[in-house]
Image (cartoon, rainbow, N blue to C red; front, side, top):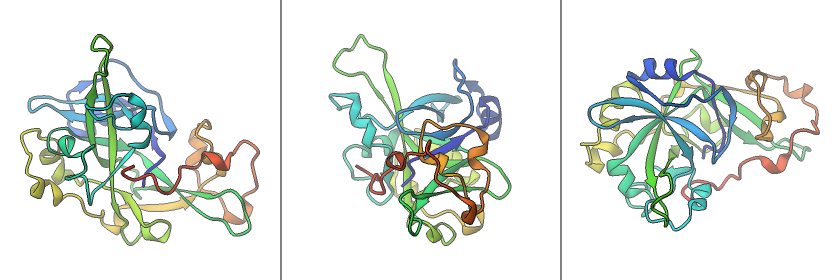
Length: 250
């Protein structure tokens, strides 16, 4: 699964990297501990214009009676996205890229109550292009502001990632961006070819402070490597705030 990630690149750099020409009206500051339900950047394409917009992380299907359903729709499994009722329409019509500067995963620490967070990122520091879906929800009150929400697709881990977890986000190569974002493409067989593990050499990882365990903690220091034998319990790190391991495709 992917339950926490880093979004530290400014929107103009994101737009340039992904070939977008329009920017969101409001800008988001750097977030080194992105948690579900927060607003995040998404790269969208309507067939004419590619833009960087904001969406709430946690997909709310059009048919949902309440937006809170999105709290458990932060990930969609690649294996079932084409058939799952909550995601199949968006998979055909509403795909996006969710840019990330890295993401976190956790492992158990022998003799410790708190889990150990790891920061996974590209060795060259370039952004990751998470495969995502988006929807617009208007709710029972049609007069309220429409809510755009998104989810991150996940699949089997590659060889590098499997050292710490058995799943990871689907990361799209640049050669897939145009097709993935094209709303005119609705062939699930074509789209399904992109839902594969990223090459092992695309990512690397290192242990980081247990401060990451608490989503309220922020700052660039969160992604800095730490020595495992030097990690000490931190009262500000709440182990209960670590994402549960069963969050995919809830």
